[in-house]
Length: 153
Image 1 (cartoon, helix red, strand yellow):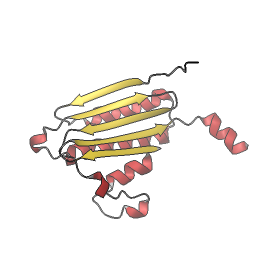
Image 2: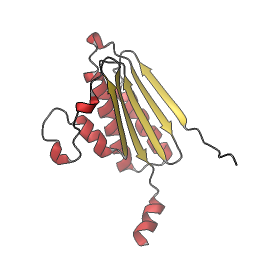
Image 3: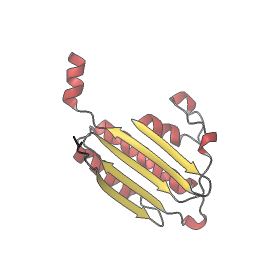
């Protein structure tokens, strides 16, 4: 018996001079809203994607803003996966400690990855010196009915 795999719908942006945060924010919110996410989930998702996009611009390390950014939305029936990838300088991600709680976010710098992790249902970071960085954010669609039934059961 062959299992049927459903391919996600894809929305993809590529920017050579990435200065379109508002476009990314508006698209993130619209996609999440059309999928049926609750407003608080839309806010969390939008904030996480904003932070990933801003980090990519700020830390890609290319002189003159020549870094290329790619943003990919994979729309599944039960989740949205957003990947933000830069072609910047990258870094050794094995040496990075990402805060897991708000207590770890005490400094003004370095809070972005911790916030992204806390606002996401799933988080992946891949970076390699000289290659670039990819941040993947996963947010699951939570049905109101399902939550209500679980609370009653």
